[in-house]
Amino acid sequence: MKNKWNLSKSEQRAYSWNAERLRAAGVAIGVDSVASSAPPGEPSLRIEQSGNSELHAGTLGGIVLAMRVCLMPLKSGIIICDYDIAIPGCDAEFFLTEPPEGSRSYRAFPRLELEFELEGTSVLNHRILRSLPIDRQFDGFLLAQSFDRLPRQFQRGMLITAEIVLFDQRGNLYNSKVQLTVDWHEQNRGSRGKRQQDADSHPHSTPGSVPPVRPARPSSSGK
Image (cartoon, helix red, strand yellow):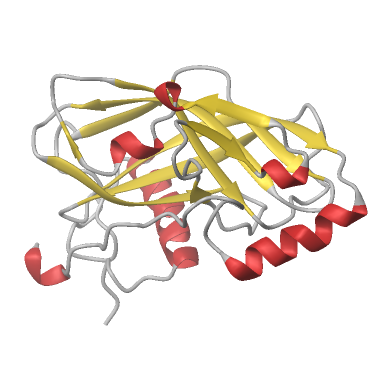
């Protein structure tokens, strides 16, 4: 029997998009079926886009998402345990970037000529996968990346939409749509082999960094 913990990534994405459309139409979503939505009434966590966001893509492969968002915990005791990031029309698998070991800055794909860097103080990646205090707002960039190639249908300067889904310790999901401006970066042929080597060695890590560790989702029996 399908439940909210044994859905595949593609099933989670499909559920999230369908649930959003049903909620917009006023249809209640049951919390005991597949992945549950936010608790009834006022949600425990609000996610909103708070500034310009960008998608950087390499011509030979590699995608970086810099999504400016604001997280506002509205109830205490929320612990973010997992996440999913998807772009309609793109099958790339995204993971949150981690800074190189011993560094306070994030630099996505330094060997692929994607010269994009953010200081750690403006990045939310390391600040949200934990308990969120109710008396604070978290405003900054969620920096994600993929080793996959962006389809050419996404042209430079286009505005596209990405969906962020955050899961808390009770299996509730909180999602938000973020608009990003597409930018392409030329890459030389030598970087293609390096990209594949990095992906094979660390399929869920930034080249030169430690692999990110996702907290395990709680079992369904703990609900």
